[in-house]
Amino acid sequence: MRARFGLALSLPLCIIPRTRIEPLEFPIMSSLKLHNAMWPGLVGKGDDEGQEPPISLDRMLELTAAAEVDGQKYDGIDYFLFFPHTDPYASVDDLKSIADKIAGHGFDVGSLVAPIWPGTVGDSAMGDDASQSKFLESIKVGCRIAGIFDEHGVRKSGVIRIDSAEFGVDKWREDSTSNTKRIAATFREAAKIAADSGQRLAAEGEICWAGMHSWKDMLDLLEEVGMPETLGFQADLAHTYLYLLGYNAPEHALLKEGYGEDEFYAAYEEMTDKLRPWTIDFHVAQNDGTVHGAGSHDKTGKHCQADDPNGKLDIVKCSQYWLKDYADRGIEHICWDGCMFPNAVLETPETWNTILKTMIDVRDAV
Image 1 (cartoon, rainbow, N blue to C red):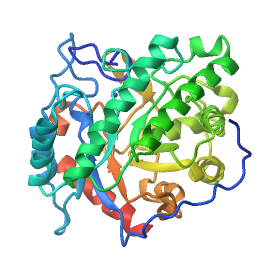
Image 2 (image 1 turned 45 degrees about the vertical axis):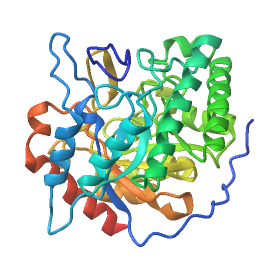
Image 3 (image 1 turned 135 degrees about the horizontal axis):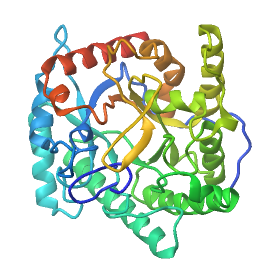
């Protein structure tokens, strides 16, 4: 993927008023399930100079299954639908074999990441008709696999994650209004495909994706799409922290350098109050206030280890802002996202125990 992934395959992973969105009816869960993402084994990995090799799905499952804190283990995984972990056009039997493998570790599958980026199945949601067609094909691919996993029984909940697949904001800024409308039109068609398949889409808020690179532009795009029952927001603690600082959109910054704690939480509440009603998927993460990248993906929120001394976030406290009334929005699990960690970190068992302990603390505080 040109933008998000630096693999050997050159991978990059109608307006409505701003009023409260009526909650959908979802079953009340006794507690949030705890998931680990599989894509940290892929993001920024590859065989280009300076890159580390991808970590296989089998190994990521083993590392996740080995983690345990006071008898608690991970409940499931979230999963990227592309090579080398998955052939997006795999046969039904092959996909059921993958489902069996995941279930064999005692895991459910939760949210899936559609292969929307150039170099995978899809292409830019802001592009021409050919690019839009590829983007929508990737949604069909994602919905097909989701349906097979659902029918198998390994997947009981979760969304399909997307973004604009348009890396960087310079081209978007050439005509921001028209380009947001184009992305929204693509997303609207994608949401129709998802709805017909009984799936929901969540657009990831991250500063590198055009039209989604600030909290305000993200909100404008969601409102332009105007299908909250099918297309919502995926909040990631690391990425949304940079929303506050106005990286890639200084005009929308809610904090200035040197801010104090009271200023931080006032700004955080302002941001989460606007985006939380749309939030249907949530990533626990840490951020040290810098941008980071690997491969060709070079300006996005830096994921840090859960106990990183340079971390800017009180993970447990900040998570509560996003997870207020989570059941009303159909959220049944939370997932850790640690993109672009070195392989040595990912291969260290204590990494996953520390993350699991943090996620338990998040769950228990809600």
